[in-house]
Image (cartoon, rainbow, N blue to C red; front, side, top):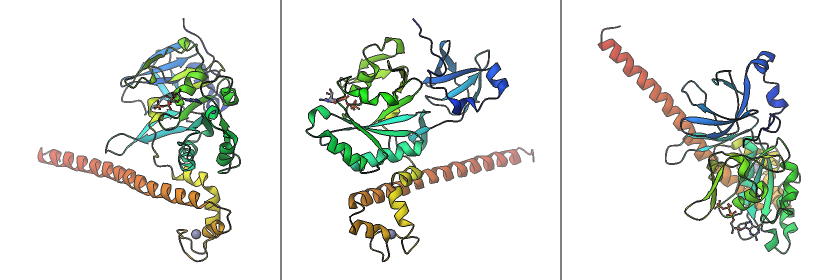
Length: 347
Ligand SMILES: Nc1nc2c(ncn2[C@@H]2O[C@H](COP(=O)(O)OP(=O)(O)OP(=O)(O)O)[C@@H](O)[C@H]2O)c(=O)[nH]1
Ligand SMILES: [Zn+2]
């Protein structure tokens, strides 16, 4: 049985609607990418699911993207994204690879055991903010912790506006606190290190009835449950859960802006340092180190900021190098082609 969803249920909103002309609205079908394979995309449409073959003329697309297709099911164009997650591709080659688009909220999952780590939460926060999505910190294993609220307070100490919830991921009545981010038309995804309870939470949020999502859930070699096939799943609460393998392995890609937002307190203080290139180490007139001495800023937070910015310098440089190399390669190809033409006496 195929279940039909309205565009709003699939995540359509005014942000996308205002990108369309009246003609486009009348002539084209609006579809959302629900899975990406080597040679084709799977789509959610108001009439059910569809497949779309990838062609070289199409722009790079990813799960969650909104597209317009014509009456013959040919790609017409993609819409601007509300948010976008990308990462460095695996292996030594540094490249950006898109992994998910148009997420409203990302649950940053962290377990209330020795995995709990504010540095790691700040790292994920920087990525989520850079991608343009809202972050909610979800602390699992609240049932195994004496005082979960003390950890919620620690997280909110990072940023008073940051939402944090402690849950027992195995218990649907406990994860109800996440419902306001999982309402109809809202797209959410989960991020967090291995073993913190992401699969458990996904199973609980999807409920028992996952048949209508069309996905196959099977255990991998380690006995973990993985979803194969479609990456977008409808939750009983009406929200759309995005579960792509790429999100699980997300590394800190180039996200300097996200780091600046996450550490906006440090950037604000740094504006008043005596030297504009102050490194906030031991320079005189450094307002950042003064704030630490007054107990208004944690040394841990400044150290983590330095660490993430150092990583940015390395990642940023390698990505910039790659782009320069691509340009150099393009120039080389063009000059070889020109030489060949000259040798063939065409010039
Ligand atoms: N008591 C308790 N156990 C939990 C909770 N959340 C997860 N677990 C258990 O923790 C273990 C790891 O959870 P998973 O859901 O597999 O973790 P994961 O983040 O998906 O791990 P990866 O698949 O490696 O990414 C499982 O045995 C779960 O049953 C919780 O809130 N309370
Ligand atoms: Zn300074």
